[in-house]
Amino acid sequence: MINLSKMIENGESEKIEFKNSLSLHNPIYTAISAFSNKNGGSILVGINDNKEVVGVSLGKNTLENLANEIQRNTDPHIFPTITVLKKNNNNVVIIEVEENEEKPVFFRDKAFIRVGKTNQKLSSSEIKRMILEGHSGVYWDEKICENALKDDIDVDKLKWFVNETNKQRNRDLDPELSIEETLSKLDLVKDGKLTNAAVLLFGKDPQRFVRQAEIQCGRFKGTKAIDFVDRKTFPGNIIDQRTKAIEFVKDHINLKTTIVGTERIDEWEYPIAAIRESITNCICHRNYKLSSNIQIRIFNDRLEFWGCGPLPEHLTVEDIKKPHNSHPRNPLIAKRFFDIKFIEHWGTGIERIIQSCLKAGLPKPIFEIKAGDFVVILNKYKITDEILRELNKRQQKAIDYLFLENRITNKEYRSINIGISRSTALNDLKELVDKGIIALEGSGPGAHYILV
Image (cartoon, rainbow, N blue to C red; front, side, top):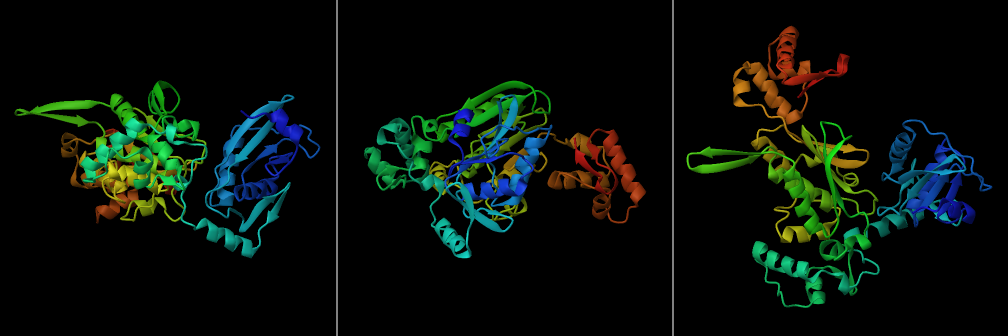
């Protein structure tokens, strides 16, 4: 818990900086760069140099705009924790910045580092040195988990894993080996100490060391994230988290059963393969240094899977839709998930999500960055054969296009139906709107249609 009075009393230091106004954009971003490149720290906005609380005024979107501006002005992007506390009836904004795993962090092509109470600009040679150190090849999940001991490992879960990987991948790990020997063969110890991956995979209480390593699941009423119907938070090891999160989703989506001849066929309204892959993706690719949790949001019309943090810097949303090499943020966790077939093949997860949705007759999933997090969205609506038979060939082409691209314009409608006029396209699209199959969004040059 933040002790604001104590922080103000102690004054500025290597980990604390005061600013009297949110309008001091450049000094704030400079401090964020400096803290990110050192040991982290906090910026208290609304406190002047004399430790006096002057407060700041907050509008409806002030904090959201601040977070977006910090992200936009830092490279690699920084996602600090921003909170507001009251002191003497004044608002004090606290921007908590963690040491960044990827260094150096730049602000407007310049990088800074915290030295005592000051933010010093890094020289070109210091930047090169920091880049070389950053490419040492040590990922967060491979680092030592300080204070974690052998007794913190759940022996039963470790033995289960050994038996499972022997069965799934034809390995020959000896289940009678000691904890130390087993973890060593799985590359989960370093210099005789447990790694972060070891604690997350097999810890009795991983949240004692990585508090934010949880999955939050929520079923909302309707189509907006306002009113909960049900919600649960799953702590514990990440193997069990995955299983419980999948079960939570299954508890809140529909299962249709049909009998064909003597065969019973169960069909979920969303493909389970896509759900499994999306949750696995969140666990393997999340940034465990961020204070937020993985979130799974269930609405009447869609599922949303929110990872923690964006894609790796060298990948874009468009890149991951194409064949690509696997770039897990936590490769050690990903390897152990592969051992027990939570991951089937390297670099195929996104394609499996896409294909399983299309095979189920659902629209192509949406992949995007929201508020700094990578989000996978599975939309539910399905166009039946009966509905398609009522449409003309042009409209059927448009539905196929919408399944793949999620949106279509009048111009795009004409491009897939060569030779038709603008008015014909408009009439076709209007008919689809009237049937409740698509909806018009936007106006003017930005007008487009989506499935509803």
